[in-house]
Length: 279
Image: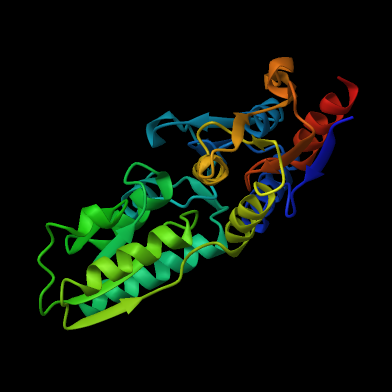
């Protein structure tokens, strides 16, 4: 019989759960509600909310009256202005930890710092922060991105995409220090819940024959869990639901660890475990 270990924490993180609760409360009032981009990076949850009336749009022009829900990743300042200009109501479901990053960036911009954001430039959270930072900024994904920057005698500030791994962020910080800025301020904007999941992944991979990471294929924090699990050569698979399980994965496997991204509901994780137990 296969031993199954369910990682802790599991299910939604605080910010995702808060965003879902805000959306569901709004939908109960039966207003016309749009989400500018998927509220979270989990297709099963997005589909569930869509069936309840939350319409996902990619452009503000697609909203006709009603209310726009700002997703957990936050929104660019220019997009917020456009919504207000159209006099469309806003329900803000931005994760409070992401909102804190916006406050930090706004303050640093006023003080004239050169802002380095460590993260994926096309991720919605990073795109919003980058626009808020203005012209004196750079988005990098690793220490290589710092290589060509001239930071000598500059006042520099660093912060990170909330779902980044700490080792990666620390390497960039050290890389910036080597560039001899006259001042360097580092802000720890890494999500504590995500950090716990990453730590759990590192611990579980030591004793598991197989690692299963459950979460949306577009979820940044889920993809990083997959990367962490694979580092020591442990057999690892990324699936969105129990439908993605394959019997061939379990040949000669005695122990399985099941982890989840922060936008994965617990019921999806439990279904994966149940299907393994029944097979």
